[in-house]
Amino acid sequence: RHDLKAPLYDNVNDNMEKYIKIILDNCNQKIIDDENSATEILNAKNIDLDNKKTYLNYYQNVISKIKSIEDKNLWDALLDNRIIDYSEHNIIDYFLEKDLNSHLVNYINNGEGDIDFNNISEEYKNEDFENLFDKAIVTNELNNLKYKQIITSLNFDYEGFDVLGIENDKLIIVIDENIIRMNSETLLFMRENYSDSVLYYIKKNIHDYKEIMDEDLFSH
Image: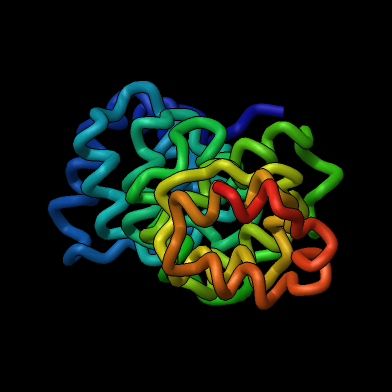
């Protein structure tokens, strides 16, 4: 079947750079394209990266999945402009490509809704979740609510704890959620590196603490 609109489409497609520039110059800094149209424009090979970023600055709708945008150079702008749907999928997909950087931290902190990685636990490798956990546990820039939701729903804990750089308010959350187990090695590490929190750690694990007390431990 012959598509009567094909010549017009081909003409626009062949001159996409000019077409998008006209849109940007005449949109009053507001673009309400649907998701499919936006994805097609952002994935177009014949549109300059700067024009795509300007398009994102003006875009008013939401794109469901960050992975639908092929050019990862746009991913920071997608998060910064709050264009990507707030979801666990988008958090970990971005993380696996670009790490837990300031763009992702701000996206997480400012997003509405809870974070629960149990919802997608079967869709990614366990090591992907573990890598996110290891990075999140020392990311003090996360607000406390999101921090707690992330580290608890990733479902990891420490048999032996030797992680440096966790600020006190975050460490209290880690202790409260039983992510740090009580044992003699961890207690010594806490005494040496988190002296302000060691008493709280003991009180929260008082029964286990009593079981591991011995003269050798107190000689250190």
